Amino acid sequence: MASKLDIFLLTITITFAILHVILAGDPDITSDFILPPNITSVNGTFFTFTGTRNIFQTPLPTTFKVTKATKTEFPALDGQSVSYAILQFPNGSVNPPHTHPRSAELLFLLVGSLQVGFIDTKNVLFCQTLEAGDIFVFPKGLVHFQYATDNSIAISGFGSANAGTCFLLLGLLRKLNKRHTYGDFVNAYEIHEDK
Image (cartoon, rainbow, N blue to C red):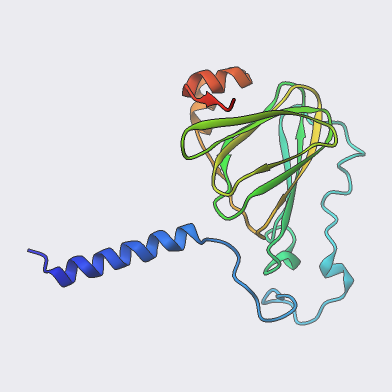
């Protein structure tokens, strides 16, 4: 039988584990920037990401595509608490329900039209139709999605060099192998839209 001390220590351990997940994010750094272990000196090229140069010179992909600039693709972001993603949506495509456990997402729609939404912890759906030039924020850790009602391109900014992405139901949607609409998500989860 567990003693009171064992129960107390277990409670403290679980509390700290939960707090670690809740407070997940980028640690503060004590230098201007962090060099990868295999680099000893840098110049301006270290702070330049060229992986998005061809975004506007190539045709829109035929399926939803994300081009990320996180610390994995762009090591200069390590410790800077910032990253970006360029989202390319052909008409009718969807960025399925997902979360970012370490950051909020600030989406800026450059071209097209998107239906976007997130579900809060009270199971309320907050949604909006965005037009080019609109900005929408998805709060940290909440389930959210984007659905293209036109060929669209957006830029998402994150307050973490590695916001993380946890997809929900992606495997299920692939198994069903059919096109889903914005209404399908609302009806499938019996969620309540904000009024």
